[in-house]
Image 1 (cartoon, rainbow, N blue to C red):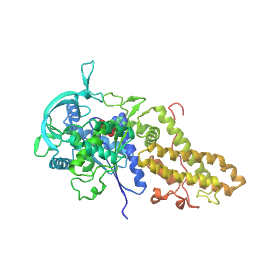
Image 2 (image 1 turned 90 degrees about the horizontal axis):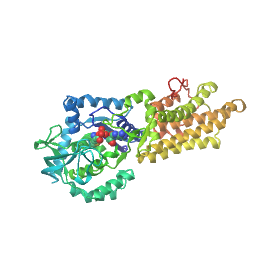
Image 3 (image 1 turned 90 degrees about the vertical axis):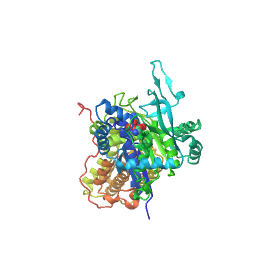
Image 4 (image 1 turned 60 degrees about the vertical axis):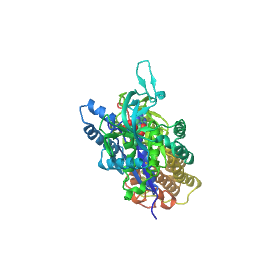
Length: 515
Ligand code: ME8
């Protein structure tokens, strides 16, 4: 039987600067979602990459005395390096300057043109370079500083040029019908409501080409024009799975199961993209999820504000799984979140070092000392033993449901709820006292605890992959028995299996000078 496929993407980042925490956040969250489905038995394809065209890249390149391609070639590898530093499991990394992407963008353009949705006209309007978007006069505001601003608070300028247009206005009703028929198409609910009211307020045709610069994909049949950067950017999602070759093996992954993006670009993904796809006769993605923004102690980060915290430094300083765990647990996925040194240290010390780390360390060192360094005998389970084991098994069902709707924090909450309960169980059963009074019962308690750690470690793999693997190594769980099909009792730790010497998996963060 062929496995169910699952295609997941991040937004592609502008490499006009180095990657920042916002980019890291999106990638590690998407990675957790991808890893979860893989461990749950699906045939997963996970795509990320860089968005290298457009005026934003051109302007930064000019300022730095580079060609836009040189700028892209300098920075794109930093985004690849970030994916490695975060232990991301992406299957591909797409750069929109690759030949495969030119072919794909030109093919979708031709398909939209063949459907009668592209016409040539003249454009005059307010353009924000920073947002790479045109705005209607009514969406802009002239402020006291004499500068006109768009709805995202970025400056806009008046631009007039010949341009190709996409007949977006023709798609208003079809889009609304699609949102209606597919309530899960946009998440979370606030984002969906914003999009629906934007589309209801009326859609204008969209200018989709530029003549004032040539850094972009040439328009088929009229190479005085390059495509508006968002036309080619959105197309990356189909390029990545083989478009326009719909006979390619990889095309089976389309449509995407979820596009994970930030809340600032939901309109592009939930309005323009489905309209382009409808026009080109291509299936629509199943879901677009707009996550929140991260703020450094409440302040928005951006390259221009200059308070970008470097993800590489963060990973080096706290550890990759600590960074992954912190952001995924602390920030409800879909909402904005803030972070600070204190919050990272408190959260990771409490949950990873104290709760999970100590549970593993204490139970495994007792097993090493008192059970000959092998998995103890299970004996007869008491109600308390069954309860904690069951809770670990039920956490999978809770996590599965939560991850299907990108509620990553809910999944992690359920898993770490088991860890907290297991600590209470361990303390309450006092295996160290049983050692003298009832050694058989001690073995049962240690087996139950180690088995709970096994289940939790299997479930933790999407979120903290390297540490979870270390825990599973300490429990001598074979590599081919670590997926979710092995969470249950049928795959419990086998009595007598020799275990390696226990080691700490989660170092406690100690402030300098505290040690
Ligand atoms: O928007 N917190 O690229 P980008 C959380 N190239 N997420 C953040 C963030 C923050 N502080 N700052 C940015 C683009 N992001 C386009 C996308 S997709 C076909 C083209 C998120 O480099 C942002 O919301 O500005 C987006 O999803 C991603 O990082 C890349 O942002």
